[in-house]
Image (cartoon, rainbow, N blue to C red; front, side, top):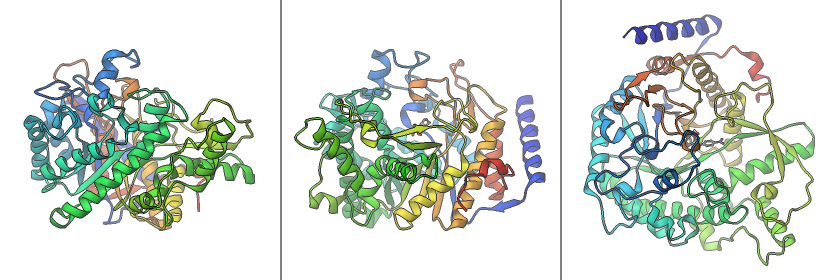
Length: 502
Ligand code: PNW
């Protein structure tokens, strides 16, 4: 209790100092707020009841890849403590809770011929408790934990996955769609394909750079579109929900004003975000032209008979186009981009295909995650880029957050949220149609390769205590105060805004 009081006082102090320094800004009523988690990162209970093995179970159990040698076997024990989770979400006063479904918990062997009643019961109970607390459940269908049985068949390199994923989606629509009105098919397909298929820093760690990530993305695009059409054709009219996906993107800022760097930064964003966004949100559909050109050119120079980037048929292009009811975005940080003039290496490689040099400005404040620098104006620029490039879509921000090591008096996280929420308001004032903002994460959890060494939570979780007690950090109280008033103090740090749009 003493700790709670200290945190409250500290938080009030921070809020009042910030308020004295700057004006108060109001969030529009059209913006709703939420917090997010993902199944493998919080649930634990990896083999409870008839749950099947996922690629993250296999990866953490059989490789030495996790920094602190940990895994998600127990994690935050949310499988047994979801009532406490709902209590926390309620305490914060958010409008929605974004969580993901563990595919192998509801379909133990990956296929829809066998549905786990215990798996369905777990999510049923979570959804009912949320609704009872007046919080909207938002479901992510795929947050990286593929059933191992489907990985054994090639995972996302197997074109049959399009059907298997759609079957899984249908089971979820049937079981939960009466109460769940916002569906996110895939979380960050870029990370799935680049890090899990091209690289080795996410399961299944295939490491077939320059080849496998393109096949993975091709099948995920088709899987997403098929699930979207299924919802559209069979469920939308009765369930009246919405469906899209959530793409991760950095803001890629040109390192200088030279035309070459400006072009390189645009290419970087087209070949990372546009890779997935262009087929769905652009007028013409398909992959960005610059991406088709680059990968084809490099592939031919490397002796391949065709581009390593698979081609869509005109029917597929039309089928994929428009398959999102909103533009879901996960954003954390920015990078500086310089153009390169590399000779084409004989080994295929995604980074060579993009062919830019990226780095972090040394003046940017750091988080604990090596890739996360604090660049709020980049958020504003990115939201404006999406608005301009894709003709003003409705943007729902499904993740944004900051990592530290082990800190309940998390003033750096408070500062991050203050600055990024101000940048979001700037973007709304610029004309961006942003309707949702989600903090990652509700609580500290299993941070993939980093295990439990990087914490993103608004709530602190004690991973040494078998009961996994959760305690609000100062940032939880700060977030709660923002939600209560739907206002925020203007960020006074002019220096951090020096590169912003305007
Ligand atoms: C997200 N980047 O991943 C994931 O959706 C979460 O599961 C994860 O815990 C969270 O961010 C924090 O890492 C990202 O390089 C991974 O910009 C990498 C990046 C962004 C998001």
